[in-house]
Length: 214
Ligand SMILES: [Zn+2]
Image 1: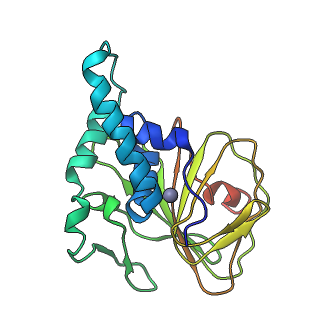
Image 2: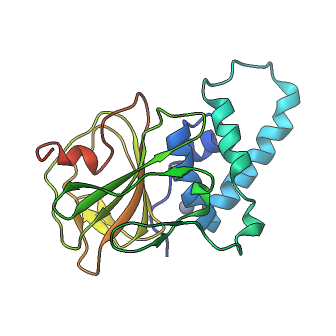
């Protein structure tokens, strides 16, 4: 049961193609697995299409072409029966969400004890800050704040902090006011896909918590 969803604003920006490249992949991953958000985006896209002929054209977002390419590279939902792509991390392969099809998945790199990170490169948007994290069970992470909006989708395992307990399928959208001290649940490692909006930052949701360690 998915409990945490992207904000209405993020869904609207996804439908309009104005969400940045990294957050687009994270929110799309959520939407692909969430019927409620899939329906919402479908309605928004229908409304947007109906309005297209009625409004003046506006300047496209700088990475709109990359977003379009990323979308074109993605298989339609109906083709989900195709075997999922696989990354090969040290602890064995994991299933990747369909939204990552066609993207370049980097090697898993050690970031801190029990924490590894893999950078995901989006063709046409090399500066997008899109990463996957895998973090061992029960790992508690230091308090941190952050500057821009961050989108974190739980792929497996879970983590929790003062704001909630996040499980597979949940998307955490946090602005700069939120102060986290996440801890991974005891049931196993947690794998997340995360992106930061705005200029490229050295780390993402989990990564910036690691600054004292790196
Ligand atoms: Zn949802």
